[in-house]
Image (cartoon, rainbow, N blue to C red; front, side):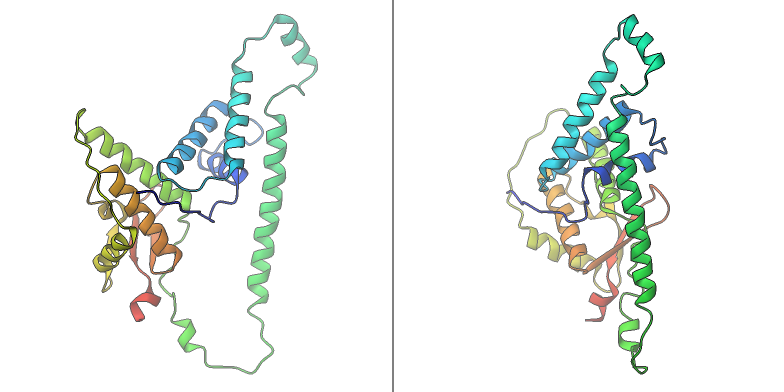
Length: 248
């Protein structure tokens, strides 16, 4: 079965590149193109495996990175090396770096405006009202710094371990797995305040079943029926029923 799911959490290829640069703590003005390109393509490949709807701009950026990587690997003649000593504007990364710097500037400005909006929203001109009912909602549903990138990385890591454990020869079984049914199974497992590790929800290690489980988790988080949290970078992601859902 094929499920086409459009994920709105991605803000574009430049956002993914910034995420990789921050994750691997590299200098934005001296990007190790080979390393970043490999990691970028890994994310794209994972999204394709999950049959997520990938915008064409992601593929265009992948082609751009490969072109830059190829150009930097080409051998240079002596006269070209001599010219580079006097003119450094031929760095094939220059245009991409400028785009990233500009994007980061506007992203930081947007974050600052969002903080100001949040601060301004705390000011009221109406008389005091009873907001006890609302203050209880979502009090324990913060997902901290968990992003879709972290979820994809966790899925990559788990898939790699499953592939390494599988025998070289195996029988492929075709089985239709309704995503709605898997969503109900996950909700049942977490009902009543239960908490499970992200990896423990993947009880069936067949590729089709793993993909359906991953998409079911994303859909439940999108509808605020599930929440997650992660203790520190690369830590285990915990999945649990949102408080709002538990109160229903």
